[in-house]
Each structure stands twice: as structure tokens, then as C-alpha cells.
Image: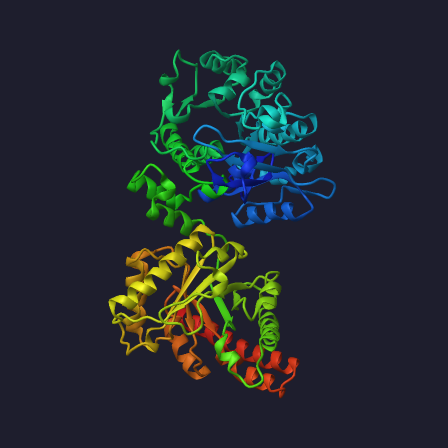
Length: 633
């Protein structure tokens, strides 16, 4: 049984996409950072569609190289074939969206790491782990990387595996166009044609645009070019035709492109063509390797390409399998897919990285409660929060499934240090105790402060609200939450919404569910909910039903503590753990309150405070784990 469906081989890069759309690349003020390079994009695109992929490429032994490797791993791509080169830098590409037809880009690939691949870097066992090898044209452009690519293909053919080529013609990467012509898609070259034609017989599937078949076939007559390719290869040929879709040819080439097999196309707005071919290839490979007929495989391919041209970036634009099925079911509701809020919610929710089946959170994001303690100063509170972080790390022991909540006003140093740990990290944005909800000044009146946050830190906001609040209070608080939610999406940050209705008015089994319904009705889809420790099974069931009715992909719920005793928390854990949507807890004062008071007065040493809080935290973790085990039984 093969462990992998496909292995791609070729270039990888860090793509810096101009964040401003409609201007010159010269005038870009900021850039969004993504992984790039056709084989890298395809490995990620196919992984999102449920295939098991790996990539053979090279990265530098530096920050950008680690970024690529870590992103691949987050996408579920096998990275055994990623060579870390201490002598070369990771490739870099600068890109922009000028208009619907101009997409300037500059390749920084001088002596880059992926061009240092050699035949010795090809692991035969990795190749044989897969059902197919997918090569791209750039790595046929230089003798050394060509030899490495050919070795991978030879191993694959000897083992009876499938092979595929994305022609992926970039003239300046073949040395037939200048550095300023990165956008160019076609320059005739007899040398390039000859090199491609010497390898085409090695493939079972060859994919390209009309211009790419022109270079492969040595003529700008598309039919003649396809026939020239057919003369040296029995591969299935897939010719991409832009807005006209794509056609497949498995035998002799007919007199017109319209006589090939085709799949349904999708009339959407063209926003960004960069990376569309890699999205197309990902969908095509999904259908091809799953044994679908060509119309179905091309349907997948065309849809994935449509997603890519409608969004910013390459890999981040590609759909998950669930998203693709949602799109097929609901169709095009508006041609600019990126602005279809329902579709974008499915895209976001089904492509989130990292998995948290359980999360036990030590919450020390408290501000006002610590400021009120005898002896407390801002400096001492910051130092105490470092002790809390030490206690959290002591319990977590470098393992996943643990986390913290910490603010950046009084606990900034703890947040900085927590970044290098595997902890789940949430940060509050509400002004403590505010009602109606007010945000911390650091977030800014336009919420622009979120742009400065590390991407894996979760935006947490506490809203004191109740279903019976008057319309004016609801309108005020909803408006703030809606703005915050969309700012989180804009900055690609996960969002945790904490609601505590019991601090506003009396509650019953339906209260929390009614609050949740109201926020969903306002178009707010939290990644996480932080909820009170309800002890009624009816209250939990109504709450779970309200969430799952609106969002089947939510990350889950964490139970807050409200300063309750361990005994009362154990009771609430026992009920909450029966529901798989409840992933854990986020508790603070039960863990740190006594230690904080004594430490601020100088009655407890740093070591004693850490030890006491670690013991308290560990006991709560054990209580939660035992509650989950009992629920499973």
C-alpha cells in the first residue's frame, strides 16, 4: 500500500504579494507573504483536496527556508524531500496585481537553494512511496536539476508509477527573457523546445496553456504544436484555454480544440491569474489519481483554477475538498468569489492550519484584577505573568494540547517568550469590564493594531451580554463584534468570542444558546467560543445545537472558570466533557489568585509561585482529562 499519492519536484519560493491592488509594483507599500513555486503550490493544493502529497525541492538554512518547510507541514505535505542547503538562500518572488491583465513579478533566483538539487538528493524510497511523480518545466532548464528530475522520473517509470508534467514555462527562468520580464509567458526558443521534446516521452500526462504547448511543440499554431508533442509522447495532453476552459486529448489530435474532451467552466471575475495554473493542476491531479473521467477531472481543475483567479495569493487561494463540494452544490452566487461571505467562511474554516483536539488553557490575561492587588505595579504584574508562563510550560512540557491567555499591555514580555513554544496562545482585546464593549487602545480606532499580531495568536474578546439587553446595547456591542470579526478575517487571525450572560441578568438553560444565535444572525462566525461552566446537560445541548446549526466547522468551545473552586469546576467539566465540541478549558484565578496576592506582597518567592501555580494547573488538566475519559466510557 502506497503511503503517498504523489511527489512533486522542482522550485519553491517565498512569494511576497503586493497588498495594494491596482497600482504599480514600484509603488507597493506592503506585501503579504506566502509559499510559492509550482511544485510547492501543487503539493499544497492536492493536500487540501485530500491527496497525500510530498515535494522534492531545496530551501536555505534560514528563516525563509524554515517558513516554507513549516508551511508545507501545516498543509499536510510530506517534507522528507525538502533539502536544507546551508550554502544557498531560499528563492524569493515579488508579485503584484496591476489590473485584470497585468501581473508584474520579479524572480529572485540567483544561486537559489532549489536549483542546487542533485541526483544524490533523490530518495528512491520516497519516490516509491507514491503513486505518481509530478515534474514542472523549470527544473528541466539546467543540467544539474534536470538530472535530478530525470532520476526521479526514471525511478517512477521503473516502478510502474504514473508521471505528469506541468510545462510551467517561464521564459526568464530559462534565460530567454530579462529579469524585468517575469510576467512574460512566451518567448520562442529552439533550445527550450528541443530540451522539452527530449523528455516528453517520459510522461503519462502533460499539461500546459496554449503558449506552453507552443514552446513544447515548436510552433505558435496550437493544433500543430499539439501534434508535434503527440509525435514524441503518448501522454494524455491537457490544453488550458483560459476563460474557454480546458480540453483533453488522449489519442490523435483533431483539427480543432473544441473536439477534445472538456469539463464545465465557471464564469467568474478574474482578479489574479498568478498561481491559477497550479490550482488547475491540483484539481486535475485529484481527478486523474482518483480515476475520474476527463470531464469530471476537468471540472475539478476548472473550479480550482476559478478559486485561484478570484483570490489573493496562490496556495492560500486553493480550496479544500469540502469547499469544492460546497461550491458545486451552491454554484456561483457572485462572480467575485472572494466576496461571497458564505463561501469564504467555508474556505477559511476548512483550511485552518494546526489541529487542537484538546486545549487546556491557563488564562492569565487578567488586568484589573491584578492591578487591584496590594503591592501591584505594572512592572510587577509583567514579572508575575512571566512566572505564569513558566508554570504553563512546566506543565505542558513542550507537548501540544496546552495553552495560555495573556494580554500585551501588562504581559507583553510573556507573550514574546511564548511564541517559541507549542502553546495555544490567545490575547484579549476588550477593555477590562467594559459594557458596552470597548476595545484596548492598542487595537486602534480602525482595528489596525491587529496587523501587528503574530499569525498564530488568537484574538479573544469578552462581551458581557444577555438576550434581554435592550436594542441600543445590543446594537452597540454587535457593531463592535462585527467589526472585530471582519478585522480578524482580514488579518488571517482566529477569533475567540467569550460571552458571560450571568454577569448581566438571570440565566436559564436557553440563555447562552440565545446569545449565540444572535451573533450568528449578525454574521459573526467565531473560530472558538469561550463559555460559562454550565452544569445543566440541557443548557449544554441547546448551546451545542445552536453552534452546529450555523457552523459545522467551528474549532470548538473552551469552558471558562469564573474563579470557581476546583470542586465546582470538576462538576462542570464532567458535564461539558460529554460533548465533543467542548475541547477543554480556559481557567485563570482558580490557578493563580492566591499566588498572585502573596507574591505581590513579597510573601512568596518566584520559585514557590511557579510551583504552586503549576500544581494547580496540573490538577485542572487532570480533572479535564479524567472527565473526557469518563465521557468516552
